[in-house]
Image 1 (cartoon, helix red, strand yellow):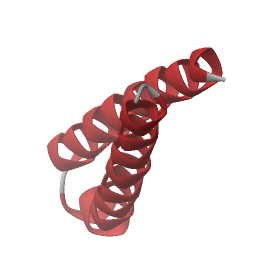
Image 2: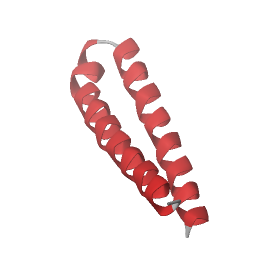
Image 3: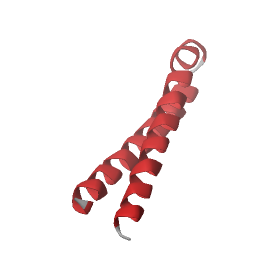
Image 4: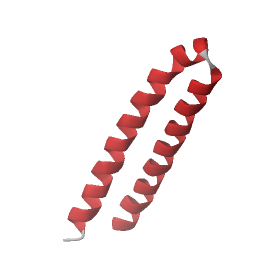
Length: 64
């Protein structure tokens, strides 16, 4: 079970990284694209970070 949580945690961390780079890309594209997509990337990043943190805590609690 801990192997599954570890794999899910790695996937969540990768998804956070992709959302972060997507937000940076949106900022560099300029006005219209940024206005349309920056908030979406930021919301996705925050949600994915919360998921990664929850998986990390679950992994820690399972090791007890």
